[in-house]
Length: 538
Image (tube, rainbow, N blue to C red; front, side, top):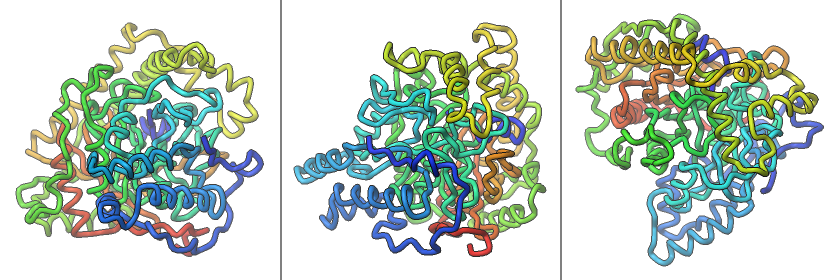
């Protein structure tokens, strides 16, 4: 579903919008320092709803503005390559939602709002679902993923599919985040030579560049948090089970989840609220709270007061980059000024040991989950097993593997069924060490509402030869445990965004969202990107 940097996660804890084959992987070059004004730049979901309610704009007009923006910045202009394809029915869908509104039927805050989906979220429409791989090109699932269906029911306009790290970055030890054979190399909209992180790279770059109102990403370990941080966004990695995974190309049935990526905490909360729900096809959702408006109290008088909130500082995630540490220290002081009680330091046990067990378990889970997903596509599916994907890549190596290989796919294919003792041992150890003896123990010992850590460092230079350059992060603790994590823009290093993460116990999203919103209100660090050629201009 989404792994940041493949092994780096374990170690560090219709209308195609693709450029031509000739230039889609070309090194990022210079771009205009200004790309012109945009009528919807930094507009919020609430503001779009107000404009439609007061008849200033229709959903069709809003959708058309975003489609034009995608054409200008993804295919021409800076060529972000953040969108693999747009939905050829988007304008027609928007018009129907306009008719509903005119007739007095407004489904909720997402009614008529254009949203991008990561290209591993199935849609049974005229857009394909491929996880960025040519092996699934022209693959249209039989039904929507539960998440896509929920968003349609909420009135969202599904604008298209965002680029990603192919197979959610679970393919090679030397991959470049944001590269897929279908979409090419996605770029960071702040500095085009820099990486957008992954695997929800296109969701992050597109939402940041105002190509949509917000976007859906997925995470197994870090792949909502890291690209949100690198692209100056709010990202919410929910508790596993709050959002259904059915119909999403899988990696790990224990760690996978979808989540929102948006420009404000309120927008991320609104999108997450529209995605949640119990799904009989995903048993993990059976224990989730009833669907609710997770942002309903934001903005009320007094909600920015954190005087009853205890936040622990995960110092074990510091000391890798002094510039990032300085941003975190400022964030801590902001939280203190809001009345939060700071507990410093807080140690999460077994952090390094967990990664080894996590990776072993994910190899088994990926093979089992992907084979089940591909089998569900039907007889006409271009690939029916992981072995078929591996064979396709070997037969089409010039297009599929021009920069890095598929050693992780091969390693996963060699694994046996989930009944093997080695799998059960690895998963049990990862779960025990990350939950009972990890986050649960730290939260209970210090009576914490949340733990703070750096979401990631400033974006590295994209390197298709050597792969990713991760240096800073704290996503693994919550990811392996299956617990929620919220990242918020916290500052900049040479003009590149850096986020701060708040993670906590299972189902603690309302608390984490409130903390994130209070921090955002007190220290609004979000800046729209300007598509620079280098950091010296940023």
